[in-house]
Length: 147
Ligand SMILES: NC(=O)c1ccc[n+]([C@@H]2O[C@H](COP(=O)([O-])OP(=O)(O)OC[C@H]3O[C@@H](n4cnc5c(N)ncnc54)[C@H](OP(=O)(O)O)[C@@H]3O)[C@@H](O)[C@H]2O)c1
Image 1: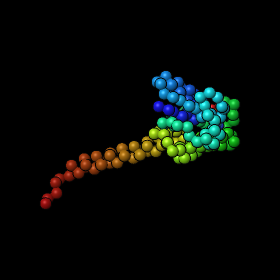
Image 2: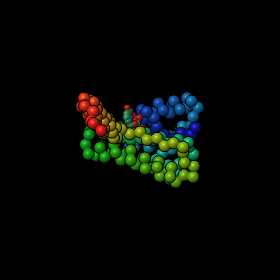
Image 3: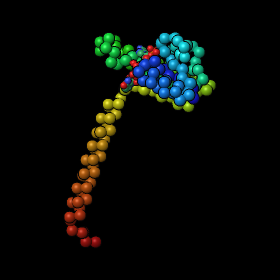
Image 4: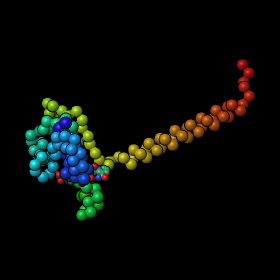
């Protein structure tokens, strides 16, 4: 398979790239820096998507960057670095005559909210189940109604 990895030079990208190459897959990275086995984000937007079967985006400013203060500018950079790279890849995928079979995005956004929501839904369901068991128990204690 030919795999294109945005932000593939990072912590997860390095491991994913190593794993894929070790299994005989062809991996190309999209990076801010040019280099062997890479294209830059501007090359991607100018020349379009290289021929590939899978696209993965891992690019984004490191949320835990110890050299940066958690201020408005940094928060905006965390967000836009993910949105802009995703938009560039999405545009390239939309415009290519040979779209990939899979398109994988990795961000941490929304995980906590989804988990809280699913916990809330789970608790509501448990409360409904308890209520319906109590009603069944209560009904079973009542004498049968005459027809
Ligand atoms: N590591 C974790 O435990 C973890 C957990 C949950 C979610 N995630 C998410 O998974 C993704 C990858 O994580 P990671 O730990 O591999 O991240 P990482 O080590 O910080 O690497 C991300 C890559 O993104 C590129 N990048 C950094 N700043 C950028 C910017 N301002 N604009 C465009 N590209 C930028 C860099 O590549 P170039 O320098 O080559 O451009 C960098 O190698 C991130 O979205 C992260 O939030 C990670």
